[in-house]
Length: 327
Image 1 (cartoon, one colour):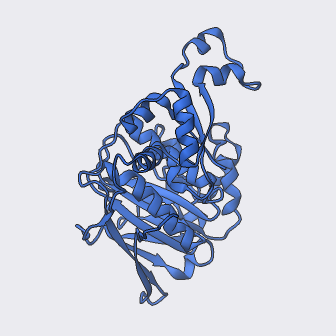
Image 2 (image 1 turned 90 degrees about the vertical axis):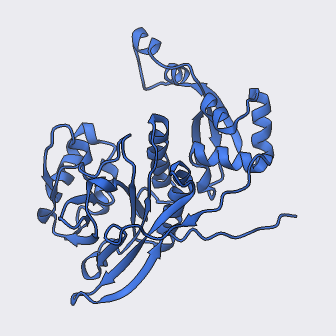
Image 3 (image 1 turned 180 degrees about the horizontal axis):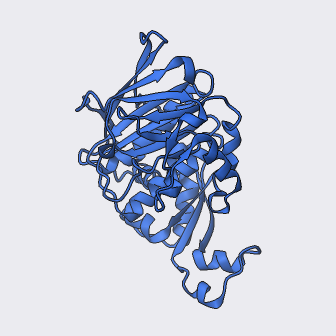
């Protein structure tokens, strides 16, 4: 059962209500989740048996109350503060469930992804994409955006083995886009982890770095997924800019910042069904911050053979809805 940590004050701001801890615990029970723990950053550090901090370091930690909420394993929409607060507001009758709108693509080039089937089929065969337009980020929204991806990677994506999410500043790259698989030595780019120093790697040297560099230890568990493959999956723009090396890392050039307005989302996968669920979840959670809330632009994904003939095509995201009656 996944656990989601949210700041109490931020959650109540999203809800437009305040509760005592006991009242919120009761609300969670009625809704079907569990308020597992009430803590703070400072309290967590104080209790830790492995992290030893000085008095000055402890004094710098926040005492902001944090709720740790256990959510059902199949409720991927509850893995971030946006999903929890929206679902609770619907449950309380404060709002209706949103209607999601798939808008016409505003730019044909940016809304096209070509998949080189002969190469990608050997390592990671599927990709689905979407575009969020005119999004407004602030620090809290940005952090939640990153944390949702981390939660999905840990849970539904099975530590990126089934699905890996890449999110990009659309205005920093140029469509149409290509999903290919290439020899590690032929993939050269500055990864997100080395943005500040601008250091370029090829695919093989990057895997070596992530296996040995303590500063990148959080990526080490994902290296074995593709390390021994003769071809590595890669997402590129029309100018051959490497946007991502899934399921490992995004490129520096297309990184998301607080100034990002248009977001290109790609999910590469070994399981197409789960890829669509992951993409729909990310879109459902963060399209609320678009200028036209709960709207998304689609991307056409074309699979081509060695003769560059389209052999399969679909449009994503799906954003299917259904009505259920509980008795």
